[in-house]
Amino acid sequence: MRTVHSLKELRAILRGYRQQEKTIGLVPTMGNLHEGHISLVRKAAEAADIVVTSIFVNPLQFGANEDLDTYPRTLLEDQDKLRAAGNTLVFAPSAEEIYPDGLARHTRIIVPEVSEGHCGACRPGHFEGVATVVAVLFNMIQPDCAVFGEKDFQQLAVIRKMAKDLLIPVEVIGAPTIREDDGLAKSSRNSYLSEEERAIAPVIYRVLKATSAEIAGGREDFEVLAQEAENSLRDAGLRVDYFNIANSQTLKPAVPEDREVTLLAAAFLGTTRLIDNISVSR
Ligand code: PAF
Figure (spheres, rainbow, N blue to C red):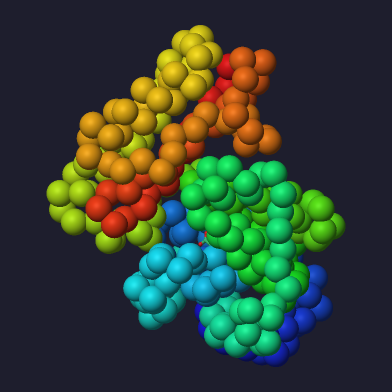
């Protein structure tokens, strides 16, 4: 497995694979890899001959008071995990490689509607940063497919819409959320939790599951249900950003006619912001 840092090196290697008619799968990450990321690499390896994992902590998607500076950078450990998972190439560019004219002067991509509620409302500019960096990575690597985790449900919807609208010839593949034994969704940010917070954190999944069971059982008073879920999270000691029940395609507030709805939650435990979601067919 090779690691490259420059676009020039990356393109030279990818040219060789394309000449051999190999298909290329991309797994974009910000590093600090865990089993969730490794499952994305495995999925990409099923869909393509060559797997490129990018590792780049993207400054454009962090807000002013967020954890950009403290976000764990663990390239050596990440390389070991990727090698063991059968990854072919690691692309670990510098910020200059991605944003050669600087952040403020770089062209940005705004994806309307799907990026507006939920995390988009709580983290202004976040999805603009995500869509922009993913578009740059798509153009750098020109993958046949790219795999993203369903844990970031709204991010996946934003990327699908961007690829569709901009006619980027890539198949965007969603991969299921990987969970700890107690249900907590695996996330790089789980490592920020204290022992006490870690013990509380699985309540998010428990409340998502209980609420989705109510919906599967026929309840359609979605606003009341969301409020009850929010109260349960608060009672457990979380500071809730949102608990929303949305149409799974549009991400707009769910209405009784919707056949597929997604419950999306974001909440702080101490200073750590956790997100999770669950989808229900009705
Ligand atoms: O999900 C992430 O880790 C990031 O948002 C992504 C897709 C790698 C873009 O920086």
